[in-house]
Image 1 (spheres, rainbow, N blue to C red):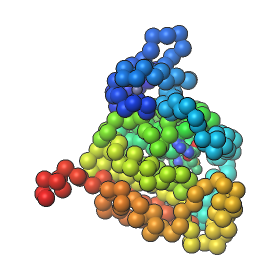
Image 2 (image 1 turned 120 degrees about the horizontal axis):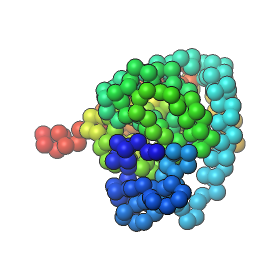
Image 3 (image 1 turned 135 degrees about the vertical axis):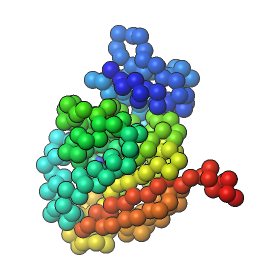
Image 4 (image 1 turned 90 degrees about the vertical axis):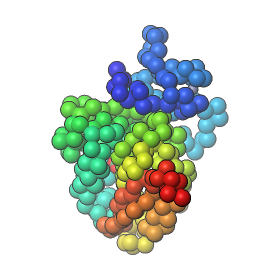
Length: 276
Ligand SMILES: C[S@@+](CC[C@H](N)C(=O)[O-])C[C@H]1O[C@@H](n2cnc3c(N)ncnc32)[C@H](O)[C@@H]1O
Ligand SMILES: [Zn+2]
């Protein structure tokens, strides 16, 4: 029901405990041995969003919106990418393929996975990787599950928030975040979470919408913000600074239209400490 290798890499999002086991009740769930929290498993997807006593109403709004968008995402996203962002959708697929290759048989995480539209066309040759897809929207996850149900690689979907990932420290070799960072309310917090989950010298890559590249994109981005949808990014260099500040080295980027693609490597803090 849950990939056994993935189970070994999980941690509790409430207390950080690394021992989570499958519950024995009638309804499937994962039980934390530290704090006793039970995380439900729905259609094979564990819901590892930490139970929150007082959820921020804004997070419901975003989630509702993402669930609605899931229904049209596969049609609307490529059209928007071409018409507004001026970036070929094939670039996401190419970037995905390269990020999967960097996993080299280790753990590959896609956060957010959305409907899995960029992963599906390139996943076949990467059957040696353990692939984990993370998203907070159930509708996005169900779409991804349908699309990816027949892939030959080891694969697990998880419902989680990328500000509090249910993965043990240093377990991921390549982590990809396509088209998400521009909408992260706490971008530095999420970048630190990504960094925490990566192995020493693990790879971080992704894409984000940036301003000041095309007038059409800027006009749309301003409307997004006006309706309170995204805390949108400024220029590429701004995101670059945030990524570098979160202990990533060798960060490179290129922009295609209003989309910035980047790759970086987790700074080997142990080696630096030894050298110093
Ligand atoms: C624009 S989509 C990108 C999906 C995919 N990476 C792609 O390029 O096709 C953004 C995704 O971020 C997810 N998301 C938004 N806030 C999130 C959060 N706090 N934690 C996890 N996922 C989140 C949404 O559900 C949505 O699927
Ligand atoms: Zn716990």
